[in-house]
Image (tube, rainbow, N blue to C red):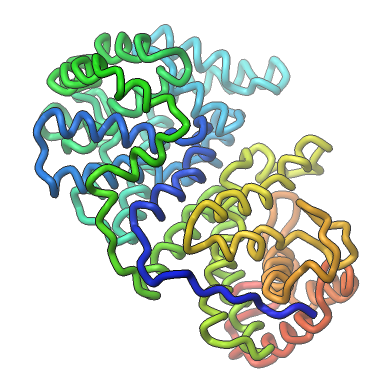
Length: 463
């Protein structure tokens, strides 16, 4: 059996900006946006900030507000599917291009509500949305903004960043949400971030000229007119526009002043960041609430039982917390489907493991975790995904995460069934030894369960 590979990062110095910037890949997927959306927003917003004369500390807070603006995006995904009977990623992507007039909004609702449902269901749901759409929108945005601000605080950013995330959807004229703030009452970081977001959405969908036209049309309603004037001036800079659509925009954003400040991230802070992103992952679906945390919990206990060193366990636990980050790229219409998946849907689910590998491989301190975390659906008999690895290619660390993941997946409630009691779960798992589950890891799990205090885990799978 392969041992846990060395997991120590090359340096204790981790550039916070690099870590946050890399993790935005997952947020872009959740929002249905093209890759590097948050990074382009950062490029746009930072130029606005510099143009209006923000101080060094203000630019620092703006930089991270722009990167973290979508940290709450996963928290309303399931609700969007439920309310609109729509693919959450497609719905979010399309909604960002809707005009500001009522007819545009109504047309969007009619086109996007229940797209794949029968006509009776579509009509019934559309009428419901037209009748209650205002309260639904308030709920969705409030959930997203509040959760995003909470995550920013958990990531140890200050209130300027947290409030900038919270008020992203406020409009200059007071017509925004969640608090109907107006003009100077809206945090400046929020005003800049919303403008940067709309500019990028429309330039990605069309071109920069169209984006500027959209910004000017919304000046005084959605946007602070002074900020619109600033982006109009910035738009005359050919280098700015060239970088905005170039393949090296990541390097350019990393070269901005706030990105250059290295900070020493100790184990505690790194765990804080990983734990916060675990919450973002688990917020995607009501059926995965707490999943990453529980998988990490049982992964650590199994690792202790199997004699894994303390240093290796730290990185193994982090891999467990991030093992499903790729699910942020899967629609909730699939994740929460209360029935059997068709072939295309099953293929989409399988892609999440590769997404996990791709996301983590781009993050310097997590590169060594990418295969370990992204291979948790590989099987010892070579029939797993995404790469159909053979047993000798599946390391012990992955086998431990797989065992913990399967245990939690069976004992947790799912959209198509209730939670399975622990004894029955162990029976099911025992039938999959040497195929999906490593026998030694399974025996370690059973010993762990025997040692847990009574009441910590019950037959109804409450952990």
